[in-house]
Length: 211
Length: 115
Image (cartoon, rainbow over all chains, first blue to last red; front, side):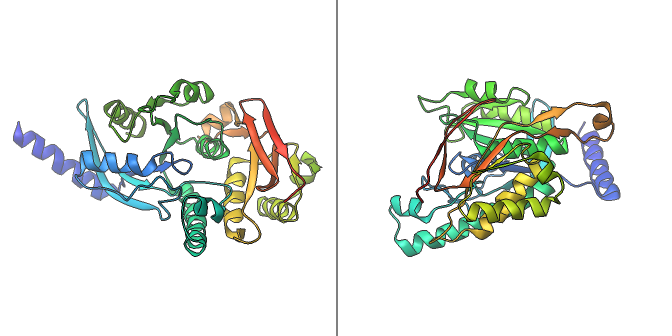
């Protein structure tokens, strides 16, 4: 049995080398503070043992896209290897005064705003280089935001797979059904990236959608 | 507030459209686009907006469009590229236009003349 497995593994590796097949690149997108990095950290901790980046309650904590290559997710006998890109939160406006309201000094707030604008540009540029998207939405917020509409539109225009993660269902006022009703044409999994709730269902959907 | 006809934007290249919109919005105009922008143009508009943000002058835009509709035509399926139907879109300076409520077919917004 071990010999067959080993043969299959070597053959798959040889096939990959011969045809230069790359892992699917999956971007984790969403508005600021939806829980993108918390989800990226959850995925990496579960399948590689380390983390993607730091998280904060102040918006735009992630201001540079981070890529982790070759993350293998195994579920129900299926296995899929992905390159995962954790992107900065998308926004149409960034006001440094919002950071000051969160307790930052003016200089630090302006610097964070500047870095955040660069992060959004980077996230938009990545859209053209992906094979699929996990769109993280905050299930306590209205799902009809411009960011959600634009990301979904871009995936639909390119006919690329999209999976919605309705995050923060550990919070009492969350309403994942509102998200499902808003975008019924796309699969949605209600999760808590923080607590790991329904995360196995998300992995099954990832394997199904991006495999 | 300017109401922009479909014909006016149809004659422009995507980059011209985006440049036109950003220039008008930076001058304090609120634009109602009869036929909206494609998803790619919306993404490009977000990108250019970010490059124009100035902490002391311009904090960005508010953009309100309905979810896109897909034409599931045979040709589209054949070429694995969907045709997207764009819809009415409102764009204005972030400090003058605020979305109150939005769903699939209704946008409620507050427009302010004060900056």
